[in-house]
Each structure stands twice: as structure tokens, then as C-alpha cells.
Amino acid sequence: MKVKMADGVQDMRAVWFENGSLKLIDQRKLPLALEIVETADWRRATEMIRDMTVRGAPAIGITAAYAMALALRAGEDPQKAALHIKAARPTAYDLFYAVDRIADACASGEDVLCAADGYAEEIVEKCRAIGRYGAPLIADGMKVMTHCNAGALATGDWGTALAPMRVAHAEGRRFFVYVSETRPRLQGMQLTAWELLQEGIDHAIIPDSASARYLRDGVGLVITGADRIAANGDFANKIGTLDKAILARHFGVPFYVAAPISTFDPHAADGKAIPIECRAEEEMTCLGGQRLAPIGSRALNPAFDVTPGTLVTGFITESGIIPPDSLSRIMKRV
Ligand code: MRU
Image 1: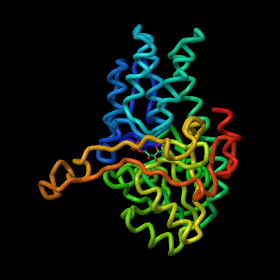
Image 2: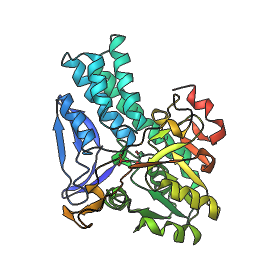
Image 3: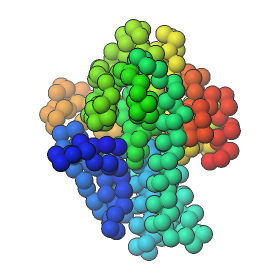
């Protein structure tokens, strides 16, 4: 990801390991401040997943891989550490996949920090492949819609849903992105818009509730990320994704989901098996720390919804674009 700093443009990752510490961009502070936080403590790294300093399924996975490696290096019991880290957030499958990968590396005598480095590099490479496979879907002059943030911040570098946009832009095609704000935590408005601005990709932030209007009036493609994809193609992603998928089908707009293999859960037969995180009411009832809802009203705040695989045109993966009815091909490799 290219980030404009006061002293020029810098290549940066959302999560990286340097001089014995895990470093992360604090995503809660963007776009007002670009702050890097660091820790060498696995419990603190786990806390940073829970409090959403880092978010987005593959970036959560990379952070979890380092948290597990730091725990094992500190002599923690592997099973206890794995359980603790896996409890940080329930929906993104990458979290579980990454912890198990580092536990396996440990069991086979590998250096766990090298294994976590390898895991991070692998995810970055997979996202680059997603970008290359997905870019041809974006034609010159097209209007594209995305939801939440499935960009570099959510993955380490390039992104999943934003990777094809980065590649198409680098190839010289000019297109326009509708970025839905993503209530209540505003990952679309605060993070996706920030990334697209850094890349010079033309875009506008829209209210989540304006999706129908723009899907009717000229959007040619929807691309989102995913937090967990079940064997039948049902997938969990940020709340509001289901609305867009239904609307895209209604208006005949192709709907693609971009995700690496670490997001595919072969143990979940369908969407009913995906656990959905419910977050604090205050995320809904308060804005900027001030309560706006009447005292006494309750709020419901499911962080994700599940979209049926039947509404998906294709999954953009590091192995190519896969139709929902052919997912068994990729599930065998998980
Ligand atoms: O609650 P978040 O911000 O972690 O939710 C993130 C999303 O829903 C993303 O779309 C998903 O993780 C894909 S990220 C490549």
C-alpha cells in the first residue's frame, strides 16, 4: 500500500514484524491520524484484534499468527494460547486458520516466528494473485461498488476486494468506485475511502441505504471481501453485504467475492454454521462518544450477515475465479 506521508510516499503494510515487535497501523485512528502501535506481548496482540486496532479477516489472521508465535516463544502452553487467541473475534475464519498453521509449524519443529513471517508473505502474495485474476472484470469507465474495507488495511497489502481495483488502475483503466459508508463503525468511509485516495482512484462515499439507487443507475460490478466462506458458497461479511447481493441480483449486476484460501472454512457446510459476532449497543447508539439515541431504547448490532452463495457470480481467489457451485475444488486444499 502506498501511503502519502509528510516527507513523500512510502510503501507500508498494515501489519508487520520488525526488531522483535509486532507493528500495526491503528485502524481506529484513520483517517484523522496515521499511528503505528507495537507490541512484543502476545496477549496485547490478541487484545488489539479484539479492540479492532487491527480488523479485516486476513489482517486479523496475520496478527493472530504473530500472537501465536510470540506466545509459543514465551513458553506458553500451545492449546491454552490458541484458545485465548481464537476467542478474540468469532467470525473471521482466517483467525482460526492462522493459529492452527503456527501450532502445526511448532509441532513439526519449525521456528515459529519464521513460520509467522512466511504466513504473512503468503497472504500478501495470495492477495496479489487475487488482484491479477480480478482486474480483467473492471472495464474502462465502469462504476464499481464495494462495502466495508477489504483493502490493504484488512489484509497486509493490496487487499482482496480492492486488489483488482489497484491492478486495473495500474494498468491504466479509469473507473469509479461507490464506497458505502458501512455503519456503524464506518470502515468504508474511514478506511476504504482513505486507501482509494492514497492510490488516486476516483470514488465517492455513499450512505449504505443508497446502494439500491446506484445499483439501479449504472453500477456494473460489485466486489466485496468475506470473513468466512462455507462449503456451499454461503459467506459472512460486514453487515449490509446481503442487501447489496440481493439488490445486485435484482438489477442484474454481477456480484463477486474476493478472498484467499484462509477465509474458506471447509468445516462449515453452509451459512448456518458461521458464528456471527454481535457487538456493543453503544456502537449504534453513540456517535463520536456522544449518545444520540433516546436513553432506554435498545439497539441490535450484528457485525456481519450471511449471503447465500446462490447470489454470488464468482469467488475471486488466488487460484482464479471460481463459481459458487465449484467450491469443492478449493475446499479440498484448505
Ligand atoms: O469488523 P471488520 O472491520 O473486521 O469486518 C471486516 C469485513 O467485513 C471485511 O469485508 C472482511 O473481513 C474482508 S477483509 C479482506
